[in-house]
Image (cartoon, rainbow, N blue to C red; front, side, top):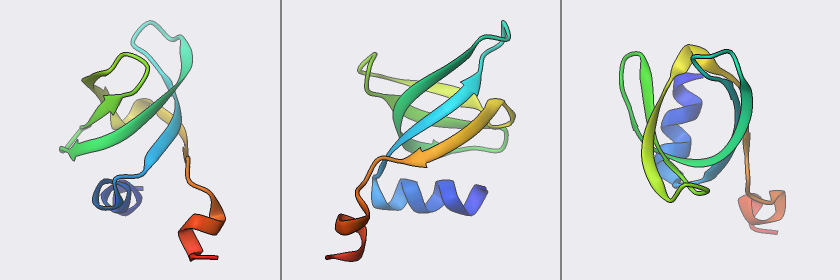
Length: 74
């Protein structure tokens, strides 16, 4: 998954990810990866309009928010 996050960072693609927070609550956010560190990812959270961090192990699912047509130039 590390390589996937690197690609999303380089392409500046919006992601929808589902994660579990410290209290055990599952939520979904729309983000853009800003930086990748050893144990965490720094991302821009569109809903909050600010940068935050999340522990990599807490991410349950990730989906890019781009259309397939745009990705393949159709």
